[in-house]
Length: 218
Ligand code: SAM
Image (cartoon, rainbow, N blue to C red):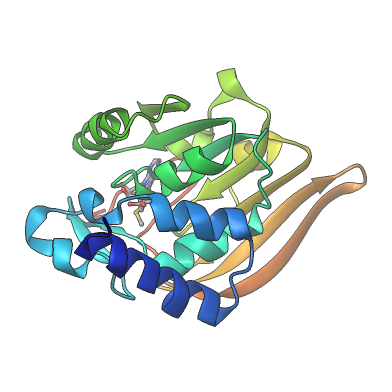
């Protein structure tokens, strides 16, 4: 039987994703499956399928569904990839990636968020996800190279270690700009070198770290 959350989720897919041009059937069906309402606190569950970001504590956010879909679609995942995500946050985007790739490595700098996401991801029985607490601007050297890298926080520039950890043919999606507004960039490693293209404007919380911004209050 379809419950209210499932109904809201399918409406989200139709009205926010398909209507705005998201086409990859695998992305649409993954976002039709992942129970986004479980990734926000109970008091916000009724708003989980709305067309907006929501707070997840620690002054961080779960991204707007359309932004999750756009970034994920741009990675063109087929199912066999090893993916690195920087900024686990609630773990929602991690779960969407876990539906679409072979292995997902996700890094979060705030231990409380990483712990909560790890527990939720395990309770939903995703077995292809590893989450660690670290400064993701350095990437995950031991697991590199990656077919795809997704950065879900805004960076002043593309962190060099992340570009270095892309496989040939690999692609990275990353918001680049100032601390409040950014442009979504697609970085591709080809045999000839690195290609960078701009996608659209966006608003993400800052990427804090050695190759990102200084700590929030500095
Ligand atoms: N993808 C998340 C979701 O679905 O809930 C939303 C992520 S939120 C917009 C950005 C996250 O990036 C925050 O949880 C923040 O703590 C994290 N972050 C910021 N700088 C980081 C860094 N250097 N390494 C790892 N995580 C970082």
